[in-house]
Image (cartoon, rainbow, N blue to C red; front, side):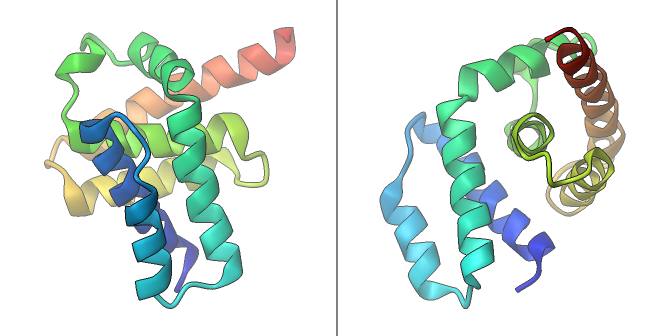
Length: 139
């Protein structure tokens, strides 16, 4: 399984989290036992899923600030799941280049969301990347 496919699995877990508002270890364990995942992909999926859940409010703050005229509550949940995944990578996974996180998020939007979502997600993430760069310079 490629990293892109692992990212898709992580997105599905995050999307579920948006409805439950809590981590579902059963779903995570089911995924790990039913899929042919490398240890590296298991670690990535677990890190992103747990990281988004553990840093949800922090990530939502930055997404909300860069949501281009939408309150966080009005963002389509599929788009929010994609944004949370990419935002986590941008803020917490230095080994993944911003461009990769952004491109992969846009690709997820092309598969799972509306025709307008890829451009919207790209715009929100551009703002997040600027915020993160500013935070790293000032922090």
